[in-house]
Image (cartoon, rainbow, N blue to C red; front, top):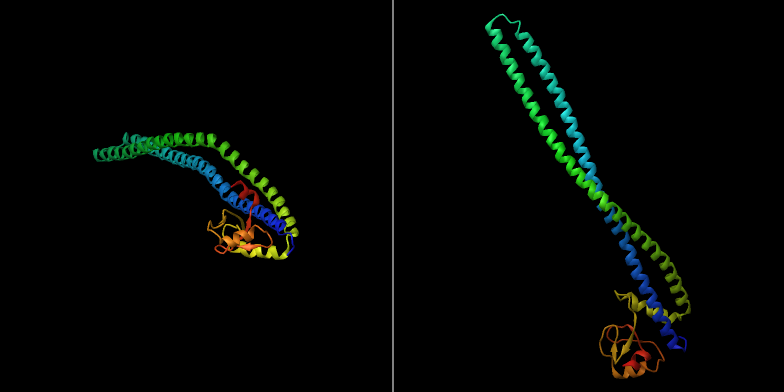
Amino acid sequence: MPSNIRQQISLLVKLQEVELSIQRTLLDLSRVEGRTAELDAQLCEFETAVESGKAHILELSKRIRALESDLQTVQGRVEKSQEKLRSVKTNKEYQSGLKEIDDLSAIGSKIEDEILAGMEQVEVASASVKDHQARLNAQAGLIRAEKESVLRDAEQARRRLEGMRADATALTDRIAAEALALYRRVKAKKANGVAICPVSAEVCGGCHVNIPPQMYNELQRVDRLKNCPNCERIIYWDEDQNRSE
């Protein structure tokens, strides 16, 4: 361990700051994919509503055209039955012809009702599509703009990340192996990644527990690295902070 412990502490503090920034940046980047997927889903929801509505209108229109074809067929049969009725010779044939016409007319009437109902459904569906299209037109631009912003911020974060990793490497190269190994061991045990912290007014900045007065006095000599007896973090006496207090 080099004799300049004060310098080693300063380097460890800087390394921790950089590594915590790397940790926060990685967390932000891990959320990018989820956010862009969420934005894509929002846009897809609007687009699907429009396309689904158009498909429904198409099916209704096909159904109406099929009904209109059926109606023409029925009307053709009614005309033929009416023509045939003119040439019947017996009352029985006449009554039978009338019944056939009535039955066909009832079928035609039912088809006409179905056509009217279908046309009403088309009208309702068209209004719904128009509403969804308006919402799509209003939101699509905003959603795409937000996605572009998220991706742009992510790219900038990746570039910053490269710089921070380079800074971390440069710092580790300047830290003594023993000090760095101690820092790594402590950090591996801490979920928040804080392995080194200052002591102020005899209180550890990591766990906020008082350290023994003798250890506090020893810290001020800055002659070797020490660990908090409670949380085991590397602790140091911050001259500037303690002077302000």
